[in-house]
Image 1 (cartoon, rainbow, N blue to C red):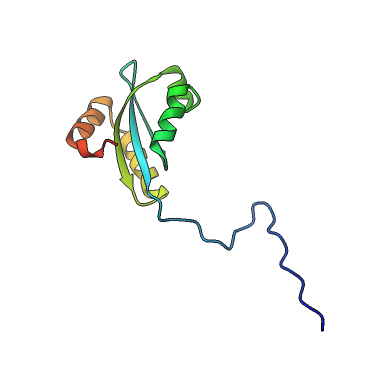
Image 2: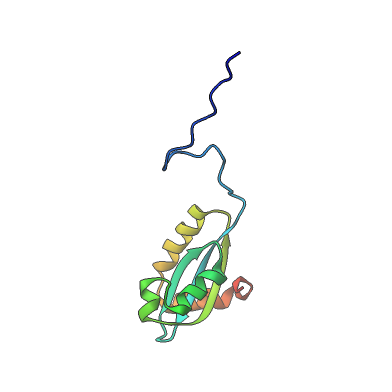
Amino acid sequence: MKLPAPPAAPQPGAHSPVPADHSKPWYVYMIECRDGSIYTGVAVDVAARYALHASGKGARYTRSHPPLRLLAVFTHPDRSTALKAEYALKKLGAPEKRALAAAHPQAIV
């Protein structure tokens, strides 16, 4: 009796049969920079991402505008929703972003 061959290893870039973990929330965060500007981004781990920004290894913007403090963090169920919220926040000016953060103090981690 001949046994079937084992399944071939997946090729790079091929779809994985293991479903992605969609249970982890995504976060939109706002960082107040030392010059008063506000940087907005998305992440799964805000603390780790903030540490990268603070060390100068985060986004290009925060390399030249070092972070002063984490202004606000908003939880979203998935990446798509977080990216849409980030896009909407980036359309706001700094005063509107500050007002939003002040109106939602529970949003700060």
